[in-house]
Every structure is written in structure tokens, then in C-alpha cells.
Length: 214
Image (cartoon, rainbow, N blue to C red; front, side):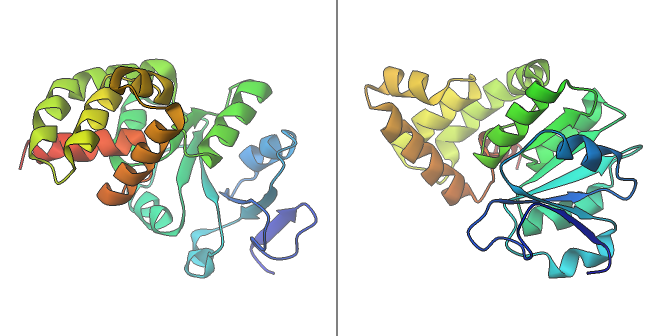
């Protein structure tokens, strides 16, 4: 198939196996990912012209060597949860990534094991951002989120949970605060993401915060 390079035993995307597509025209990031021994079908997409046929994908990794194309990001997000790996890390771009609802924004210079853990976490719906990036971003939006949550279209319990998410609470901490099991807290978070139609917790906080500005 012209424009694709595949690593692993699968000949087609998905079909019961986790599939990661790496949009990487230069190939350097893709080569780094090949060495991580991810238990997923790993594909390289050379250019964006193949995007219309992109289906059955669990995660898209967008390799950035200069500037992020945010229009392209929006297109990728319509296909699958998307993560940026960049050789030109920018705090402002990391903030933009959070605002757009990307599942992560990672520095390509990360050591192999932290990079592997971040990608595995992204496949499980966990935000893959540097801790200081999410900390600053969440603190900047915390009060707006806590205020706006009262006016959102969520249930009272869901509003409580979004308020806790805005403080950076984990599922276990949410469960402890509300007196419910961690698994129940996880289910509530999943329902909130579906109700708000967002890919991750950071995006949920952003949506709720933005409503306070309408």
C-alpha cells in the first residue's frame, strides 16, 4: 500500500489488535517508536493524503519536527485519539494541545521507558503530558471550572466529579472523596467524557471551563 509502512504481523488495521498509526513524513519518530516494543500494530503514514481512509485506529501519533499544524490536528481528532510527539517542545503548544483535546503532547527526547509508559497510558485514555504542563494548565482553569460546572448539563454527581478532576484528583481520590469505589468513580468519569463528547479528562475540564465564558 503506497504511503504506508507497517511493523508487526497484521496486514490490515485493527481486526482485534490495538493499532497505532504514526503520521511521520521523515520517519525519525517512527524509528524511535519501533524500538519501544509496543504490543500494538504500528503503522507509519507518510503523508496526510491517506487520512480519508484511516479507520479502525486506536491511537494516532503525529510526529512534529517544526510547528504543529492545528488544522491537521482537528482532522486527526475526527479519526482517533491523537498524541503529538515533537522534536521542538513548546510549552505554549502543549497548552494548545490540551485546549484542542489531544490525549498527549510529548518531547521526542524522552527516554525510552517513560515514552513507552506515556503511549501505553494514552491508549488507556490517560493524558500524556509533562506533569508541570498539566499542573499549570489545570491551576489556570481550576476556578473557572469550579464555577462553570454548576451551569453545565451534567448531573449533580457528575458536577462533583468534574470539580474534583479540576483539582487533579485521581480515580482513587475521587472515590475516597465521594465515598464510592474506585471502579464506580472510573465509570462516572467515562460517562462524563461521553456526555461532553471529549476524549480525556483534561478536555472535559476545558469544555466546562469554556462554558463559563459564553
